[in-house]
Image (tube, rainbow, N blue to C red; front, side, top):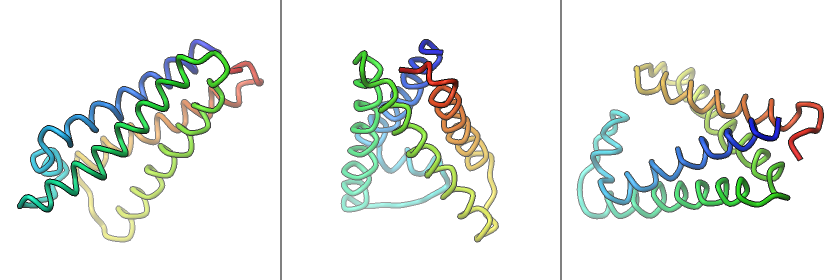
Length: 129
C-alpha cells in the first residue's frame, strides 16, 4: 500500500504544481477556463499570488513528503484534508448556487477522487507508513 500512497502524493502534488504554474504564467486565461471572467493587472497579480503561490506550495509539500521516507502519512493527511476540503466547498457552492458545468463536475471528480484515494492509502491497515 506504500506504493499506492506514493502514487497518490505524486498525482496530487503534480496537479497542484501544474495549476500553480498555469496561474503564474497565464492567470486570467486559466481562471477563464473555469468560466470566471476577470481583467486587469490587479486581478492577474492576485491570481498569481494566491492561486499560483498556494498551489505551488501545496504541490511542493506533497512531493517533498513523497520523497521523504518518514513523511508519507503526513503527506497523505495533508492531501486528504486539502483535496477533501476543496471538494466539500465545491459541492456546497454548487448546491447553494445551482451552478453546474463540465468544468465544475470534472474538478469535483478529481478533487473527491484524490481525497478518497488519500483516505484509502492512509487508513489501509496502517501500512502506509
